[in-house]
Image (cartoon, rainbow, N blue to C red):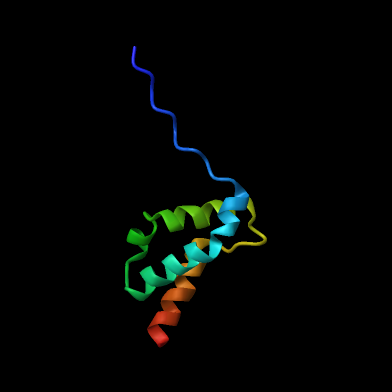
Length: 77
């Protein structure tokens, strides 16, 4: 019998927090490029931002809110 592949290692909250600026930068680039919210929701950065918001909602904003802010920022500049 073939052994099933091990699932991808899960990230810790610390690793997510350490890469938070990177996820925000990626989201900012996507918003600046005019990507739709539906397309952005399928990205890794969105999933990671959702995880952070879910684990620590008082410290990290909802990705929907961040995307809205960044979209407005791109529209005004």
